[in-house]
Amino acid sequence: MKRVVITGMGALTPIGNSTAEFWSNLKAGKSGASPITKFDPAKFKTQFGCELKDFNPLDHIEKSEARKYDLYTQYALIAVEEAVQQAKINFETLNCNRIGVIWGSGNGGITTFEEQVTEYAVGNGTPRFNPYFIPKMIVDIASGVISIKYGLRGINFTTVSACATSNTAIIDAFNYIRWGKADMIITGGSEAAITATAVGGFNASKALSVRNDSPETASRPFDPTRDGFVIGEGAGALVLESYESALARNAPIIAEIVGGGMAADAYHLTGTHPQGEGAYLGMLAALEDAEIQPEAIDYINMHATSTPMGDRSELIAVQRVFGIRPELNISATKSMTGHLLGAAGAIEAIASVMAIVDGCVPPTINTVTVDPDFSESFDFTLGTAQHKPLRYAMSNTFGFGGHIATTIFKKFKH
Image (cartoon, helix red, strand yellow):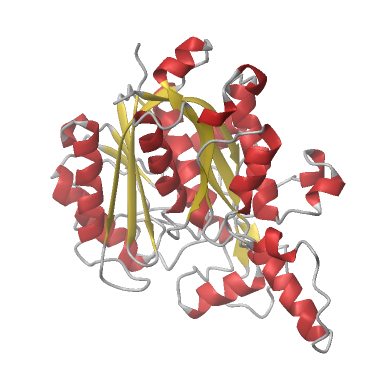
């Protein structure tokens, strides 16, 4: 099978509107949490989230175009453009029949759906829907819009596996390229779900933190005082292509993707398996796919959303796979970005790749103490980034419904 490399990345996150800014703030341990501004949260149990900062889509997209797209699609287009520019792609010189898009979103156009249904209800049932309502709302439209913008006629579809979504998309893109079904695929995920319905729904399921008095410290993975995740928004994009394709066009190769594993908890609608069964199987599958042993992994970007059950079950699974390894760095970047739901896997893939490239493990912030059952098992990288050579990095993502997706990235060498 073909080798698959990463030649471009784009990030739009609560702590940075580009890959460089995102990575700089990640290393610095900056929190992206603040009071919600997208709607009035006064009556909600949770009144904060990780919104984008100093961002206006119209700085990137013409107003006439933007009106056709939900925010999640706008975010996708902006992140993809950064990735395409970094990859130095001239699509006119390439066979676009062999270039595809596999994108992910957990909620799609939830902003549009909420707005349109609310307007319908307020309007006494008069059906005056926006003509763009359906294409703005549906979860697959971002992949279609990306392909239309660049004229890409290859494989094109959208993955949905809740918070494992964009890691699933990356694994699918990886597989199609190494199987020889495509030369290049633009992949990743986007989410714009800081809305009244999403926050209200997650509150009802008791998934969100309610630390309204201290939003910036609310996401505290592994800490015994954790009380739920902090909702975030944004997008992450990666250009994956075959090694041969990258060489042929003299592309800048950032890193290599070498493994992907998927599994299921088969346990509960929203809760994780107490023994991390699906996570355990997903990590084993990724290691087998990469043809490496557990001891080869230098860093794990944990799913670690800061929920009481979820963090513990993931630690159990990691310990089942890796044993007691005090030198193994793990960290939870959601402590800074919040949880980007369907886009989480994409921005955490970028964080994992940058960790390898920069030789730096980003920290877990806000966590003061670690669950005593695991405090000596791993290096939790608390508070401060650690500079060290990294060869392999693993990234975990898990979603409601028990979906599991794990990716493995490697320092690139010809």
